[in-house]
Image 1 (tube, helix red, strand yellow):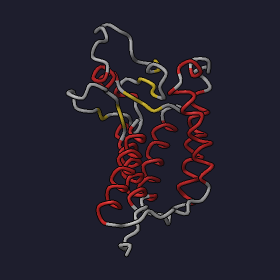
Image 2 (spheres, helix red, strand yellow):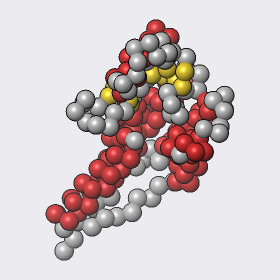
Image 3 (cartoon, one colour):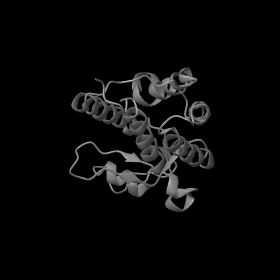
Image 4 (cartoon, one colour):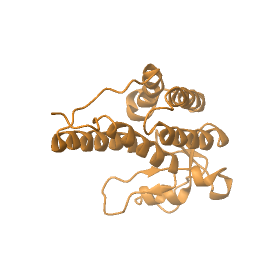
Amino acid sequence: MILLFAVAVGLLVTILRAKLTGRHLKPINLKLVWLVFLAVLPQIILFEIPALGRHVPDSQIPIILVLSQVLLLEFAIANLNQPGIRVLGIGLFANFLAIVFNGGWMPISPDIVRRIVPALPADYPLVDHRLGLSKDWIYANDDILLSWLADRFTLPTWIPYQVAFSIGDVLIAIGTIWLLWSLSDPEKRR
């Protein structure tokens, strides 16, 4: 979700910048773009389309998620010379580490789950379960390896849509916005 937000913000500010300053948009020569589609497609199917995702056994999710992360890292490495990709790559690597060190799942604590789903009954069992059909596995706080890389941040409570995200997600969003920002040519068109 944070990546979609970053793409929307990045495109919006880039287009506004181009319109307001008389700049034109230029293409970016990215290598291995097909890896992004190959990596993201399984994540969309698994985590965004419940009718399809619920048919994939939980035992297969870690394999698919790790492979997806490897493909995204390969894309980032191939494009390190592009604006924002280093930051995006650091974010991808942070998420990759969190996922690999926690059994192929993005770790999340019960405290964060209760923050994003406040209607859960107090006695509802959370630990050692998948959070809905997401990429998150709920671990006891002390069992999360590299906890600073876990999904541990949430949106302010006044925002109706609640979601947890990691520092890696934030870096991916910053890198994405930076990359999209670079689409507007620095020289004015005359």
